[in-house]
Image (cartoon, rainbow, N blue to C red; front, side, top):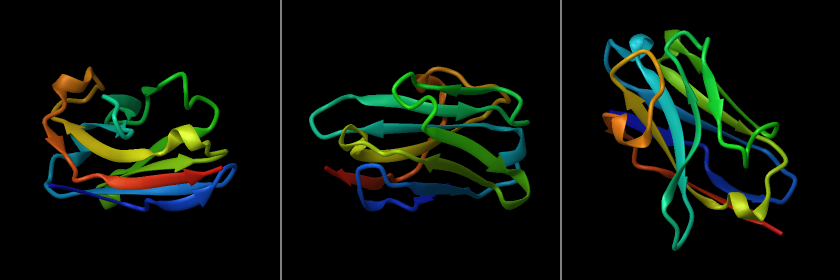
Length: 121
């Protein structure tokens, strides 16, 4: 089970940190990802991290602004979002993949309920 939190309303240029708490004993061996879905658009990849944090991927649209990191002792993955833009407005979902390395969206096994991020201009 995945529980995402930390969304909210922020002005352009501001920051938010999303958290995703996972249950289960295999979190430390799982890759984790963040995805988002803006109104009227398809869900898209944002960032992903391997079990050891050694491998990290970002969408081009968020590189240099967002940082994904994890704390395996707390079964939690985070998404630090800085320099937010109105186009970052979306419901953000965390996802867990039952293997060590990130993969494509369809390879993620479990999904959280989403947390809404709204960036005002």
